[in-house]
Image 1 (cartoon, helix red, strand yellow):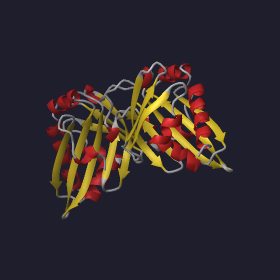
Image 2: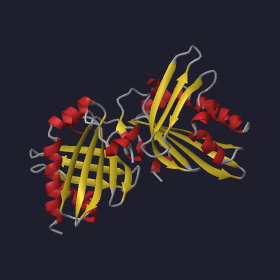
Image 3: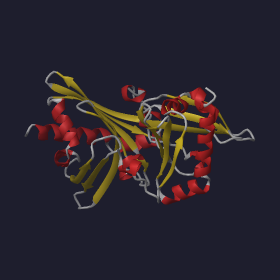
Image 4: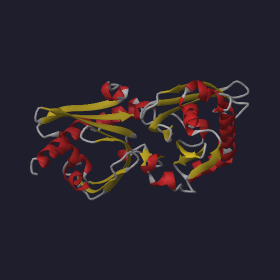
Length: 165
Length: 165
């Protein structure tokens, strides 16, 4: 495993780690199926109105978030690692096909690479979400914008949604 | 395979395709072993004075090129795909561990992703080098700077070097 997956750099990385009471196979489905992603991916009252997934390294991960005022914010990323039920890695620093991006970073914060790690934990899952930024300013801005609250809230939304299945 | 590996976009991508008379296993070694890379990687009279390789997705690919005047130009990239004897993909848009880079692009041209594809061809190799740029300006600058001459020349150097083994 890459050193920074296990040992995040607190100057540059942000991490959310939590045990949730749904199995990791279902968490994997929630993360990798567009119709599911649209149900939980954005903190309410924002919504996710579109999602496109080509689940392989180099494939697209695209979402469109809509504000309560109706403004749309598209995000385009590229998967880097797809290890079923275990690890999902993507970045918005690359377009699909690994092309270096020409787009400004999502929400104007900082390009980032995200790593979702799932480990079996009893009947539930140890869930780790890691956000890797290019520099300290990117990490700080993302933290101030509410990384922990936002990523925690959508995780709650995801768990509640999975329980309706 | 990603669409742009097979069908490069002529507005954005540059490609060098050639059949060479050395087997692909040796070409793979020449590309993935630091002591070998230093022997052929930079068009003479430039030299490659340092090379670091961690041969796995997320691992580092770092080189230092030295000009005839003695000025050093470091390049840091991150491997994306490592398929032994077949395909090697890396980008300088990411640092090792997939961190979005904070560095300006190498030689000030454009961040790029490179794809080396090796196919057996009789006793030799069909060698394809693909450079994927973020935009048309990046492709044009790289072409004007001598992509075809440069990548062709270092391929000649590599083949000649392999023949000394």
